[in-house]
Amino acid sequence: MTQCCFLRVHPLFFWFWSFHRRMALALCLQALCSLGGWLSLYISFCRLNNHRSYEWSCRLVTFTHGVLSIGLSAYIGFIDGPWPFTHPGSPNTPLQVHVLCFTLGYFIFDLGCIWRFAWRKSSKKYHTWRSRRSEERQVKHNGHLKTH
Image 1: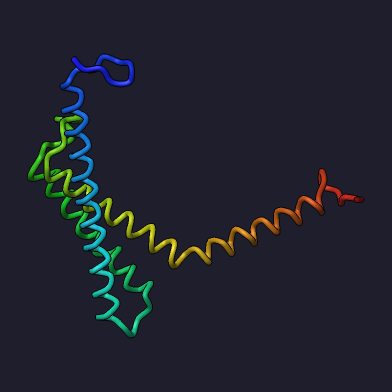
Image 2 (image 1 turned 90 degrees about the vertical axis):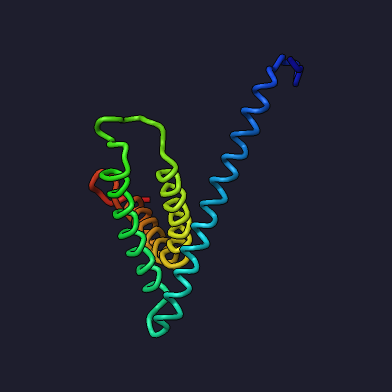
């Protein structure tokens, strides 16, 4: 037994802690590699369709992700297993973990696309909504015009 921060901790705890840190690092690395794959696909679509807008290429990546994720999910659910209706809550298989990291990389890519292409549109909508809301507050009070 070792002492750490005024607690008595079993050495197995440190092995368990380092194992989870290594596993989390491996999962993060897989997700970052997936993000790199999605970015390279986006760049290749941009170069291939240079007469189109960048948002068009982003939508092509989204379409590609949809087709791949549906295909992989169907393969996992129907062929590779385990069947989710007979074995709910069973541990994830390595293929399921890889698909999860694959999808997490796309999710990060998609957040970047939303931030890049839809931020101005969203901020304009928000400011329009806020200005209308403040005008309504000044004009109406229980169905009557405010006097002050």
